[in-house]
Amino acid sequence: MKNQINIEHKLIQPEKSISDFVYGFSMVQNIRNISDAVLVPNGRIDLFLVQEADKQFHIALIGLETKPKTLAKNNHAAMFGIHFNPLAMEYILQESIADILDSGKSLPKDFWDFNTADMNDFDFFCRKATQKIQSLLPKEIDERKCKLFELIFESNGEIPVKELSEKVYWSARQINQYFNHQFGLSLKSYCNILRFQASLEHIKAGKLFPQLNYYDQSHFIKEIKRLSGVSPKELYKNPNSRFLQFLAIHSK
Image (cartoon, rainbow, N blue to C red; front, side, top):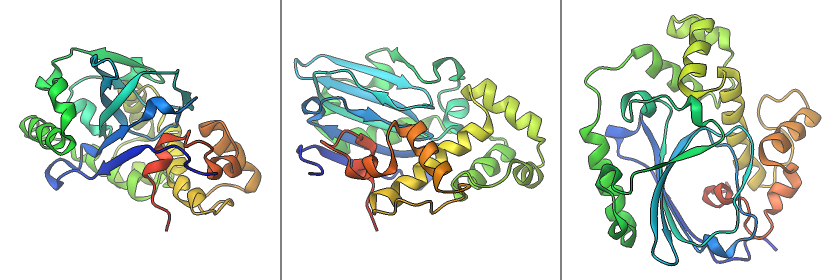
């Protein structure tokens, strides 16, 4: 049976003023009731505030993921998240995250003046985070990078590298250098993750054949399994709500 466990989950979109840098804000509760919960690559950089059942509080920054990650049994009472678009690393956090590919790092407990009281009200947390990000918005930004990510997201990662290069007036070699230095992976690898993410909506709707630009059914199954750890059929079933990001997708 699907979604047997009563997990409270919410995902809200950011204000337009920060939408180039933030994909959304999320809340998940009752995660400790899930055995072997799985996070799959989503093409975003996640900042999590975590409140443990014993009231301990911590903050972590999670780099881009290129493979599924099984969460160890935990005592999390609630997790609030800011899900950053890649541009935010250079222009908001002002750092490279290449060294935390498929991993993460702890941040100070008072990062951005967050504290345990913020975990009492998700809407307040979103407003507070939004105001902080707005205060850090850059005065100038490289238009090539803005256009690059706009095209990548609009195409779900299916736009060819050559076409990207031509449209943003930036060589493919330079784009890959930027991705590897800033994020720790190639442009192609990143685009494959976005295509996978776009496929999750189709899979949740029961469409277990490729709706996007995979070579064939075999390639589709192989890529879904590589990035989620299971076949499209098993992902669709989502036993015991293991695949957490799946909960935020609304089937059409």
